[in-house]
Length: 305
Image (cartoon, rainbow, N blue to C red; front, side, top):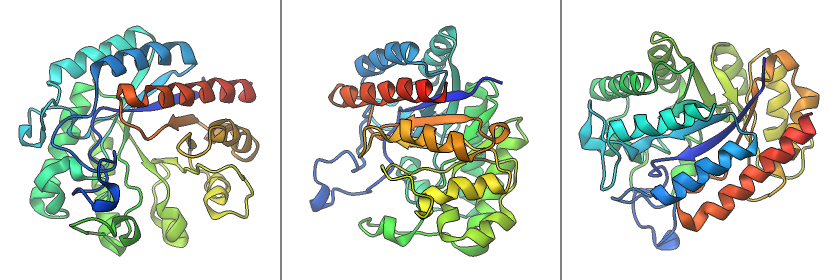
């Protein structure tokens, strides 16, 4: 089976700070009431994706569309559902597989609006169910659905106005609820794997093998003694399907290094492919960074052979 070479593209970008923290004033990490996705940048990025060797695009939707089930989540500039459908079809016409992502981590759920302050309530479960169902329909029953679920710790939320961290059985209850909502609609759930870093024993006891794992590490030193790096090996030893993730957030050559390490340490049958992201909004300001990330994908494919 052909390996996945995926790129994460942001339609919505409200996934960090929930107020204009003085330290981060004007930064992209601050949530806004307007959409930070410029159509010119989107179109240019899609042109380059087609040339780069990428064969899968993950769209982080967030507040980026006016959901028919919950239009109240939309902000200024959110796309209509039909607009997103048209863009998905354009990508498919280029031979790209298109996969949805909604991050339900409480550290990254500002896009949910007021529902981000209703976590683990019956109202919250209904909204999550409605959104998953609608997105699965918009994407024509995609084979994967990325649920995020990363960095849900106080340390990651320390600068937020509103802090909520699910722990112990509650984190697992909500994760497994989301996974079930995807699976009963014919998809396969996909998450970030960093819960493993802090809860290894529990993770391997309770994480279903059906859930695709994207461990991530954005550094340069791939010594297995580093916990973030060792997680790739530990997931491999326990037979999880993986899509390792790199980024040019800090280190330009991180993605090729990720490919080189994981090719050696993950059995081929469990290495589904790789995911690259710049963690930048889809705007003309950041287009050069996106293009450098795509160049790293080309290099990674050369290394993989």
